[in-house]
Length: 289
Image (cartoon, rainbow, N blue to C red; front, side, top):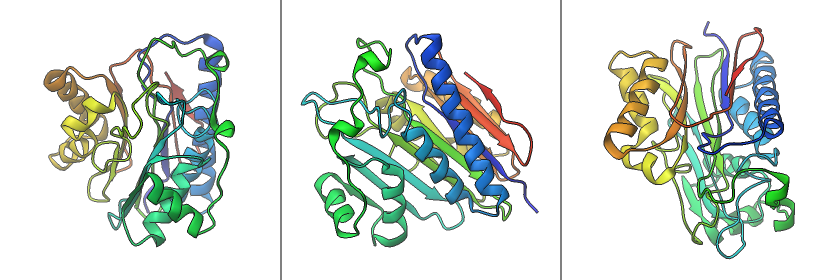
């Protein structure tokens, strides 16, 4: 029997944040990892675990996903998300959607019932309405800069994500983001792009990426990790190699979390911070930043 493992992250931040904000972000990461652990230990699937974990991260106003997402140049909030099942390679993704409190759950509904893999903008919102998916007001998502001390001068975003392995040996990945501050309307980064923002394949690994999306998508970084694992590297070695590739090829900055098919964890980043937490079976949560 495979072991239950979950890893979460709160974004690869290139800026300085206060100790108080970091404590809140770390607390959310730990809570998300524990929630995912509970799902797995109760016999839930890796998909259930990553969705549960990411919803907790989407609720944290100090993170750039769901509540706390960055407004674009029009003052609107557009969000992206991706979820992927490593057993079937099925995936669901949304981009540039508004007034959705839990984007990751809408992505999963698209994966399971939408008949498509990827819906964007008004089309994704029409689909949400057609299935009675809960909508919210923009005000429910908007958090002024005074409530979060990310430096306003930084254009970067900080995606959240989770990867998991369940007792049946199935892997899953989930990613959610509110984009980057003052982005152009309709801008889409790496987060909802399969192979860039995340990837999951039972034969290799589940991966979640964070950082500057315009760079991460150029090297298809999450699929790159899986390819490195297929070549014989461990999850950690593969994440290290992919971050080095990001640096060497496009001078990029970002981070990765991963679990390979053997249940080995990989965490790597080249930014100032990448708050993260993981837990194996019934062990205590291990966290870092």
